Image 1 (cartoon, rainbow, N blue to C red):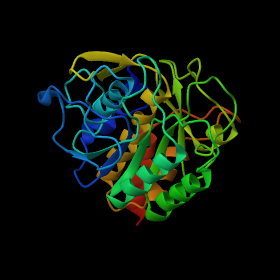
Image 2 (cartoon, rainbow, N blue to C red):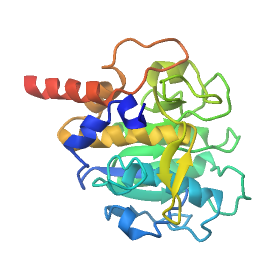
Image 3 (tube, helix red, strand yellow):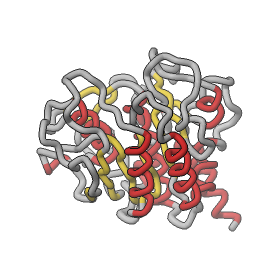
Image 4 (cartoon, rainbow, N blue to C red):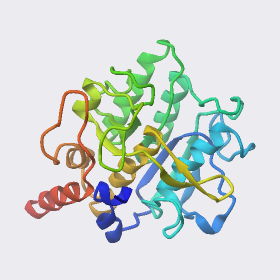
Length: 289
């Protein structure tokens, strides 16, 4: 089944391409948009420690950031999913390009915390965190404070659950305001290698993460896998829902996406994203108001 149809995103995408006032923060690697005809013009670059545009198109950080960006913000009709191209994409890189080829980029808790707070202050309504953290407990308190700050300001963090085939939780996926995302295959089953856990199953969602069409730094069609590919499906759905219901509160949008889809399937595996059910839930809320 088509990845967009699997999570009922096609109908929502038929209603809207997004609104410029809905800002989506991409906290990831730098992004290279070499073929401008394939990309939305609604892109802002945040100032930070890592340049927003790639210096090395072949670096893991550049490819990772560009892959995720294209799922969200490529133009409709390109080979990528292009979920919410008319929303504003705020590119806030935290992955440096110095990592060796093939080595997955990662960031420290302090770097991620700084990017979360900065993105929220820049007006982001939803944060896409397809990130790997360095193994360190240092800075964990600051990271939790940053997630609390996002909750207080009404910005929803969507976080890739990770691909280490572990059962458990991290400081990020444990946070009650975060939406952790598990990768699934074309039948909605958890993909091999995806992390699972009690907080992930209780608060998160499954989304397509196998053979996901995206754009490479040179604009060529590529295929992307894992929870980093799955997270932008949830991020994009939230951005489109907020575009349709711009006056909705963050807790209403989050409820519609994560809780309006029936009972949780199990203790470790979250339910499949259902963008159509989320839309109907918000529509019913606003019809009663």
